[in-house]
View 1: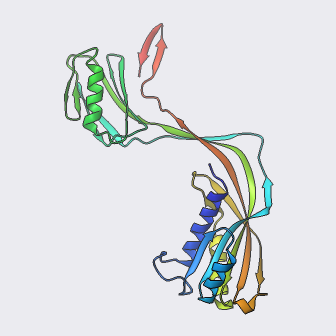
View 2 (view 1 turned 90 degrees about the vertical axis):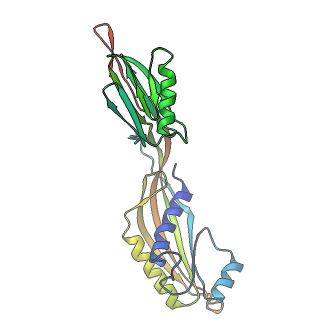
View 3 (view 1 turned 60 degrees about the vertical axis):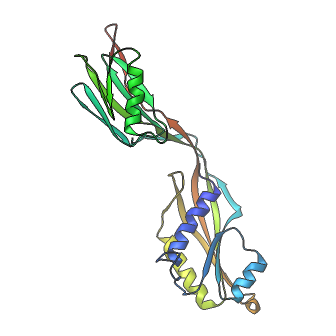
Length: 269
């Protein structure tokens, strides 16, 4: 679920990209180091950095800038899982390929009887075939060679692989103000750093959060503080509002074979 730390992390990503457009291992736009971090800076380390010409950019949630914007209805969205394992059928043989793993189901439907194996991390196609062959042999004959299972006789054979999906339900929503503060050793560095931050964040309508949701980003205000010039501290604050949801994620198993009662009889598919 998304929380304050996820929004702060998303803001950091956007700010870092603006200040280090060529990557964090390349020079910043001001050609001197710029530290970007979550939280309010400590006075001692900040003073040392500023004296050495190192700018700081902090991201901090404003304690007086929270508003509950929860709507009455719940919002749920589902995501279908995509299996990394696959299977092909040729006459009475099924061959698995790709890569197995947890969260996947592999199954055979033989003469309307289902045999299902739930994958584990590290599974290979040959291992999946061996596990299914072991299940099949409890009720009928089969042959396994590597990742291929063969069923003798004229019975119908269906093979499938599915992956678990997920649901994401929004239970609450809030608007939170975040203070982005640039602490710089001189006005020139401050202006360059703040211009880059303003341009980058003004072009973002929605921040992508870790849970796959998005937070609506809006500019609120900005102010400069030059009161501590003797300490070489030139500061500018930006205030941004981010509205985002509190979500709960749950696994959603996928159907492998269906069992339909039709005219009093089970019909598998």
